[in-house]
Length: 86
Image (cartoon, rainbow, N blue to C red; front, side, top):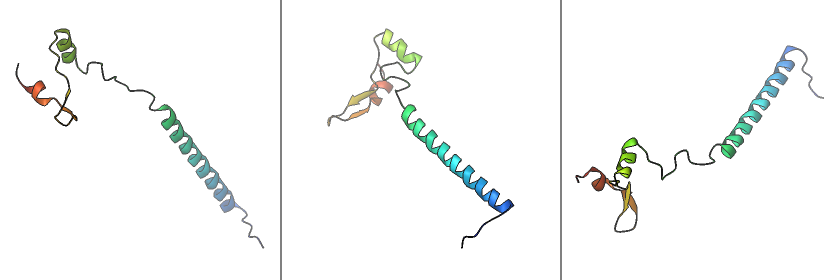
């Protein structure tokens, strides 16, 4: 035999089950949409100046690169060139 729930509790159970399913579906759809459309291109390109000071240095031909390669060919921050004197 099958148990039949009648009244308030059965309606609440169906309502909670339906609400939970639709919330889960909405969350899944927003997650899929976020991964598909969220990361299309970089916000700031690498070749654009990061500050007004870099723009000024580029116009005066005194731009110091952000990275330099070490003896092993790995890119490292160019701290000595950027922080050192002229």
